[in-house]
Length: 456
Image (cartoon, rainbow, N blue to C red; front, side):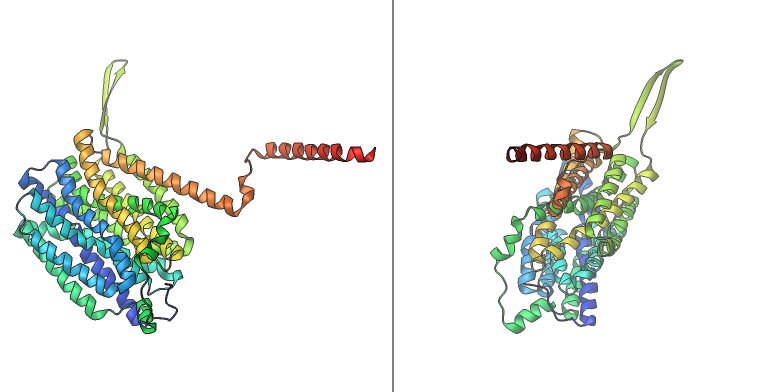
């Protein structure tokens, strides 16, 4: 299945993009609801950091695992109906969350809430079908800015929770999903590919056909990138309120607002990432992303350290630590680079796999979402085992370095395959000249040895 050749109606195209983006914002706000209410639940149930990490990560697990199938169903049945059903299902689960009473029932409810996170795979496949390749980076960047839903939860949920309790947060967020589902279904249309397929009476491709691109290593490389730029973003969006409370002693409302300060650039600037990917190429934007992330996570990894130096006149003591303001600025810069990378990763997919955006995008989104599930658990476990608050950034630094190294190695292999002359040795210029002269003399000697018998 290829992109539709007919030019869609601009009004339908615009509504598909903007309503998908708003719907994704609402879904993302629900998906990250435990970043705020989870802090109160942790206190009420006296949970450890590891248990808290599992609780806030459980919705991310569900949202990740369902992305593959939701992406395939979007390619098969259309994003309009699948998106609507996702929102209604997630709304029901979120409402039931308000009736949870112990750790196990909270985990079960969190599994259902996580369905909201599957909306990403649906929206990516649906929106991409409305735009040509040269505009998909910008369009998908705008859609991806719905990540700002995490900031919406951090801004509003603390105030609602303080005034009405955490149960009210769950119920109000559930009603928001229902309203959005009705508006979306009423005001959007089926994507051009689906409409054309129905007009021609062509059946959707089978699940097995849509899974064929997953045999390509490239898909899994994109998945690792997204594990960091998206999974890391979601993990920090969930973890930062806890970090601010634990390290800097802030109250939950202030910690939620500062967590939102991280989430906003990590979401809004995704639009810029899509535009830059269209203009300069997604590969270059990914280099910017990883180099910026490596620098930021390296600085954030340094733990507060107290030094004692044996000076001439006695011990000299001093402490090196990242202060509150530098920490906040660095996390915002990290969120900015992650936002560029999120857009750049998904710029690749419609270009390389135009007829498999749902399935390939679903797998990449699944792995990225798993990062959002596994990393908060890892952060909590590192706190319990290592006992150093900055251990979460040490882990992110390691992932960013590995991603950068793999990407650069893959690009070099592709360049050498396209330009065989790059495979040669790269010596100093003067050494290359000497080597060239020596090779010329050797070839001349060889020709002389071959022709001398005939000359005799």
